[in-house]
Image (cartoon, rainbow, N blue to C red):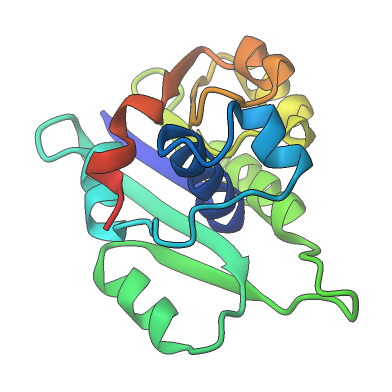
Amino acid sequence: MKIYTYVDNSNLFIEGRRVSAVSKGMAPNIYDAMNHGILDHSWNVDYGKLHRFLCGTNKAEIGGAKLWGSLPPSDSFWDMVKRKGFDHTVFDKNFQGKEKKVDVAIAHGMTKDAYTVIDKKVDEITLVAGDKDFVPVVEDLVAEGFKVEVVFWDHAARELRDAATSFVSLNPHLTLLGR
């Protein structure tokens, strides 16, 4: 068995900061944190711990660990991510400061790998993202017999959670995954 992991970095990072804000009492609940832009800027993802959590040491062989996002202030960030075990793809933000292409690139990567390198009889696809843009690709892959696990914070889109073979909440692991 191999695990193929696909991570929407910005989605994971920003929503993790919201979850941390709620856990520290900076917002009464996740929806208030979302509506009022409340983030715990002291919380950061520890990519080595994330890689171990997602891929494990004894869970299975790592087929691939891929992470997508937009350019941070320093390319050294992406060098660190690669040292922690993730292949990465970086996109520039548009003129309004918004990410474009990331969700489509992740869906494309999952689909391409599913039909070229992943053995649906034994391998597992793990998607670390929470928005419903991924529902069509997850539904299609599951319908084709692939095992697709969604790993995200509790407030992942219900439609995405329902489309997946299984869902794993990151909320209980907030401290473990932070640095």
